[in-house]
Image 1 (spheres, rainbow, N blue to C red):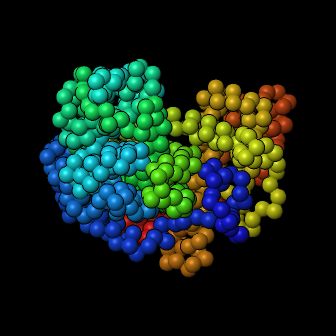
Image 2 (image 1 turned 180 degrees about the horizontal axis):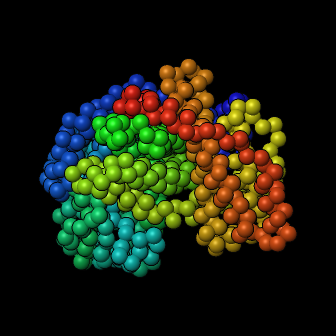
Image 3 (image 1 turned 45 degrees about the vertical axis):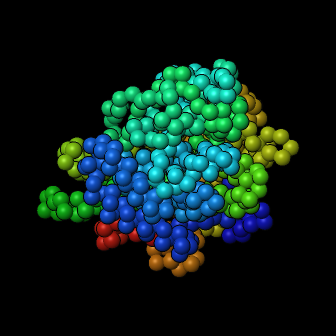
Length: 583
């Protein structure tokens, strides 16, 4: 498996490299320092958060605020804040490990992420020195809590359709409008608020809770994450100093979409962390509950659900660490010491916008499937609020809406990928639809190679015949995205399993089984999506020819997945948890 290591991996380029040839960071390669911080976060969650689960979910805002302050004392609020402003300035891998632990209590995780990610990072990446010096030290310790106010009642996915206005008057900005669904609004001290200067230039502003003219509405009554604060933010001639403009006039879209990319990376990672907890309590219940004289874990269809839970965790974890590995390598080429440090780092993050959206879409949908499997395994008890499966089912549903709906993210995945395939220096989509040659000997890598070739054939056909207009067909666009997501997920899992095998890792066999189950089933989804996309591109004899070309890429031979799942389930039952990862 020859690796490409001569330059940074370009976002979206995974489709054009031979299967398994790109370098890939995996969870088992974390540093001792990162693992130590993650262990501290785990102890914090197990000791301080989970024992107060019910109190948090009863919307005890004072408690949530106190817990954030305790997290600040541990340093885990300032992981991504530069050292010069009171933070730790650690890599994204470490932040990801901490986030996985926080995700085990959905409401607190929501508060934590709103503060450390979309709340604080606009100032980290776009603030000037004075703004950073004023706000970041307090945000790093938890003395102050942050919130992010972009959404409005009439502009959710259409963020550029915001109606909130900002007018400069006598050295002050005066803002008017209402922001909706703002996390942490009930106890935040500082808000990043988006408004249009003179009704046209979308810009970002820093507003403090004590500024005149800002208020919040009542707490929203939500389906899930009931312990997180969600309110409207009302700006009624809200008056702030002129120097609270963030990043410059008209830079709002740049700030909003750049920060959302970070949130998407993180949402994929937090879905993995939540899935691990769901698997643990589902294994416990299934091992204790008996039917027909046997524990639930002895039944094949329950084993299927348990193994699928572990498979989703393995694949999601593989995707997250692969993407974060690319991102950390790119960020390592930048420095906060540069005058353009923040902009340079945001550019590095933007490079992986496709991978960020893929992680968000795949992770959020995988967690929901895991939550559903948990409810079904619990049976009638899964429908009762006295058992944990009911709560995660409600709590995780928001993830497919957070950080841009999955529908919007599917449009972004395909749109960004196809845009990057244009131009002289673009990704080489044109001419990349040839039948694969020199397929790998490894059966799993061979499956990945065939999936890439199958996907590229129809995506290249769509681009060649329709150009940008293919994006007007949203169903076809979503199928392009689904193909990209499946290939990335499949390759991430297979490469990780191969690396663990080559290193003689204790759980290499389990990793191989998990990757095999996913690759087998993902191949069928790739084939189905490719055929249905072909139907959007051609009719009659032309469609027959295209389908014949797709069929010529012979599918891997099916395997008896029941025996693999039984083997996976037995390991899970023996361990009582998902045993992989670096912790």
